[in-house]
Image (cartoon, rainbow, N blue to C red; front, top):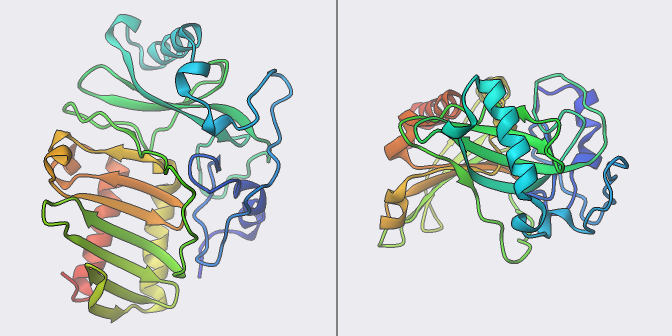
Length: 289
């Protein structure tokens, strides 16, 4: 069940490139539970920029994000924020492939089905941080407002790319949260399946189960759409506590995923906070703890 229009769903074939992680065309809408990726589809390169690597997402970032491109991006960001360039620094960057909307998802908005090679970048002043999408030459830089706005020194980065291509997820799920990272190897998973079942597992074993009504499922899907969950894809809002084995939580809707640490959730973007609050409330109302 999905609240997304057919016209947007029709773009999913082109949007589902590669492994549907960083190699996907950014700005994919929230996928239906039955949506699968289409590995090996051709990428339509932007003809205005040559040459380009055969596998843009596999290239080392320092090979393509040159000092001149960095300076161009920071100058655009400084103008956008009405700040001095000297106050800003680029904290993280990764290659990305965007559609005609530069990977910024807006509900019900149609985007040109072209693949534009570029970057996702995190810019910070040390207190606040902003996420921007830009073309590979540093032009066309636009803010991702959903993913921006973390504060009090919470500087996001990007979820590390897997060394090997992962296996397709066998479960027909709508949304999932996985809490992990403690010294004891504790893993707690809560997953909403496409048939309305809400399962909770600990270390792989089902510990609780509930069934949601179609209306409850649709209401949660609407929350994901209203708060533009696709725009949080690949962003990671964690602090140094994660390296001390404090648990982190990864949220995913099929191939779309983001990660946070609850110690700093109140400093994360408002959209992420709203989604987490809705998801936790849904689980609590269903009797899952």
